[in-house]
Image (cartoon, rainbow, N blue to C red):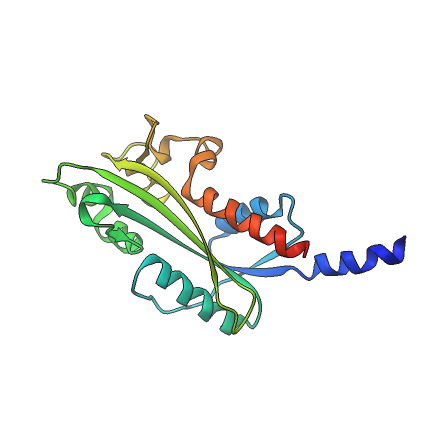
Length: 201
């Protein structure tokens, strides 16, 4: 019986990946979510990858591919976008720079004169099994509207994004409330489901 279990245990231990992030909070959350029912070991790697341009998907694939080359092993990357309907998807993957330079008030001013304030938050996790392996994408999306900032201005643009069906912005929600409907959790849930299939293959 013990001999029969050894190969399965060894196989499970082989599933390891580096999450490319310099944010310890993201690392903790990602490790927690992915560890639920999936035998995977996650550590972190803070890489200096040049800023890329293109669609969210193009950026995610190129970033993950480069990370796998630099690390020489399986890795996971994440990209977040905030897309305005009135601006045909912009700021999109460049929201980090918009937020840094314009702030919450500026993010609202971008929509002055437009009839719709609709937007959606998009999270894209990419997984590569290693150098030469084409990255796979796992997306999570939450629809909402852009509103004047409400809530603690702690997590980037959370204070101006109000999900559909709620009267709170992301920033006003508890961690438990946000995790249920967040774009990030939805993307991670898909990645977790995929990792579960390869860990039992």
